[in-house]
Length: 97
Length: 97
DNA sequence: CCGACTGTTCGAGGCGATTCGAACAGTTGA
DNA sequence: TCAACTGTTCGAATCGCCTCGAACAGTCGG
Image (cartoon, rainbow over all chains, first blue to last red; front, side, top):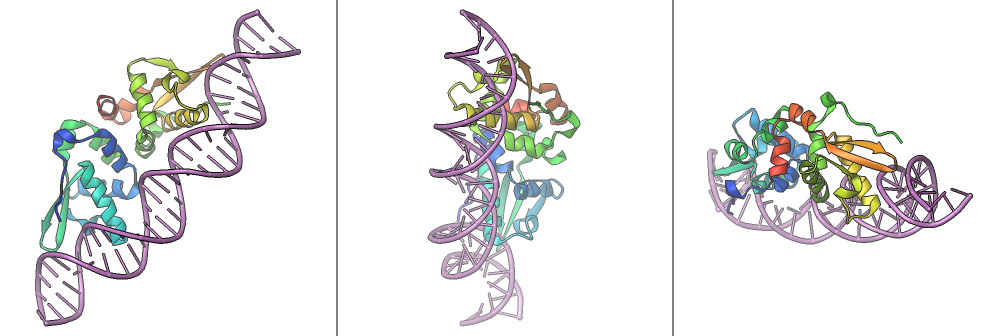
């Protein structure tokens, strides 16, 4: 299973906006903003695995987060520098509500 | 028919993100960014009236645009200063793609 | 007054996003 | 080896948004 992340230059604002348009994914983004790196599980502990996996995928494929595998765990963190360079201010607006 | 616009302090990022999450509404925003003020009709000339009206309402109620009635016309413009003060950078990210 | 015009509202239909359980792959530790 | 764990994928059901036509309100010009 390959974790494909879009290149910084390939980030599309439409995809980012779509990914941000859901309470659960917004929660993940804000949680990551306060925690640097977390296991996927830790970001959506009260959601069904299959639903959570769907949201993690959207965040990854839109370029909002990067994921790193370590054993049976998957860790995620915000692609803050990438987002700030492509869409300055967007992430802060989302995090600060 | 009252055109109720949310106050600047009441703008919610969730509503703004939802409003931006549609090609037609993104088109309106980008068209307004290049034209200051336009009649509603001019922003979505090729769409059914009822569908267009739905999108104009979402943009207005989320606080992205303000509308002004003049006779039988309705003009709209971006609430650029309001958006910049609440969510700095967001509008530019959307406009510049 | 009357037809043409801009825009709203309503209900119905369509369609994509979300959700879930079940089955699965891979890892870990006993 | 084997059970427990993290996470993915699949199909099916559900939910909500989008779309449209029809009817409507208000305005304008003749």
